[in-house]
Image (tube, rainbow, N blue to C red; front, side, top):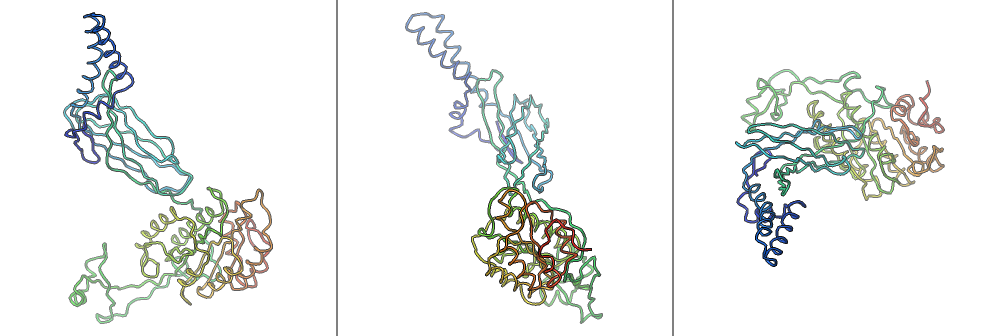
Length: 457
């Protein structure tokens, strides 16, 4: 048999193929072979010719099945398609398997099996009856995971058996696919946060290039640019295709900071404080991208998600769409860092023009709270959602301890709009509260509020 994905692969010339085929004898085939050998030995000892013929028949039948199955030239091509290939945690994706018999013979009974990680569900198995020459069979199954991550699917295995059930041969396809399970996102209300600069959707700021051929600022050609915008003089000067940058949108920037320090979180699982912070960061970046902001994702280690320029911000709307997928892919696999501080993230935030800063912090001691407070000086506006992981690991919803109130006070005095996140809080309600509260003195009066209040009207 020949199997392939997407093209057929022929392994019939393998010297160990026949031995592997003998190893594919089923329990029935081994029983027939053992009974035949035993009958032949008894016939030789007792001198019974008829018993010898029965023994030879029992022994030869499974061997004939092995030889016929091994010599059969089935050429089957298989492929896999994910719909969709990126899903939020808890959502289902459907996997479509396509089998095509490209040989001139009918296939026997086929068993199709795909390898999937245990977190996605049981291993799917399908039985396909005889497939005619040129025939196509399509089957599908569903996968679901409550845990974010990247999960490989495959390789696909095809099992062929003879009509008597004496032998089974298994062939594996070479290709596999990857299912990306991203964090859950929550729709957020379109509010204007404290200190937020204007961006697309809130008064678009555009700067047109000065008129005249000499005042045009060219840039490198990108896929999809209109060829009518090619600036030939600059192309000849730089030796590469350049286009006119006729319009330079001044997009408001937003940095989403995710605290991933291992010492800042306790517990694990889908309902843990860390998973809430990851989901909150995903919801915030998706929301700000939908509002037209240039968004970058930053962690406590100072690393930005791929997809932006040297500053980590995407340069255009088209790049924002691409970077959104890259940032969600990064959040799908983000884990705890071994670092103990936020100084690297503080160094990445350059002074004065960082736009809006939305941070999701875990436990903050006095030193790290001071570092976080200094980040406010390097952004136009800052909103912090602070999680007390110790409170999340306890049963019931309890008030934040004194140390939590103290770190919130330090952030608010520095100009942050800082909100505590109790267990099971809804980010949409906290987001609404952050939009109604102001930084500094105004937010300090809200020190006794919880994440479930809608804020002051």
